[in-house]
Length: 376
Image 1 (cartoon, rainbow, N blue to C red):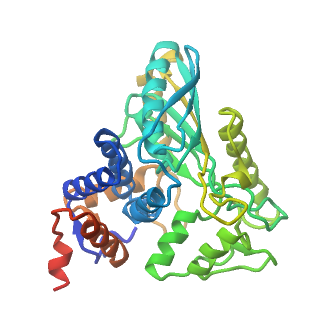
Image 2: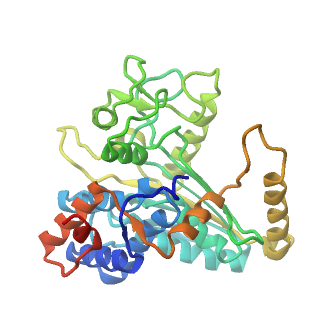
């Protein structure tokens, strides 16, 4: 995973957590909400999912608060509630805050009634989907979530970006040190990964993005512009056309789009662009859905965890391809990253360092980072 050769400087977890909380507070986010948001972002970096961690702190959250497309104070409204379901309106506040309160409710309901489901409308980016499903698996429950997003994916045989990268995410408790957590976009590559490539000066892999003329694009910065103006689209999982089964990724993306919008009575596809008819920034109005299942309502939590663990161990012990020495199960690589980073901190590249300094100086916050000394 490239961890052993890490050359970027590290920022201690506690210092980065405190810094992000103070920045969020400086932009009007209440202290309790700021702590939730900081933890979600840091969890991305703990797992090595850098496309959704500190890399996105400024461009996705702080910049949007400044532009007025993300409200720092989250006014949650419960639209409908039954013993096993909840529908919320986040009123364009912090998607991470809305999702945290949703999952707390659903976990309690699932423990009481065996399973529960919820949906949120008029929300904003909610961080890594795996954070919310892991809230369930840490309690011995099964978690499932999905969210729509800015249009990025073209349908099979199409070139127009119609649906978001629309992750379909599961966390399953096991009897191992880490849970099974499958947190994947329904495109081959997600927008956050391309943002990471652009910041790192890297090309996007060929075949993952198509132009409106059907040509493969690789220039990461140009791709980000083209995705916004609608002249490029991401290929769904499987790839372009039917030969590599791109219709499967297209189908799963559509499932997430429908559930995210239809369960919450929210907006979908082109309405989620974040740009109005005059080309000006507007609210995103995203939708999310969540399901929690308690294995105790079936054959028991411990029984579930043991069988899930047995399946994962059998998969990892199966015959390996020539030249390969290890098979992984979902969540294992992320656990390996955490073991490597837990005593070191968050690795930050030059782009993130510049963002951190700029925000700190703008708000006049009393933080000094080791990477500043290293650069002297």
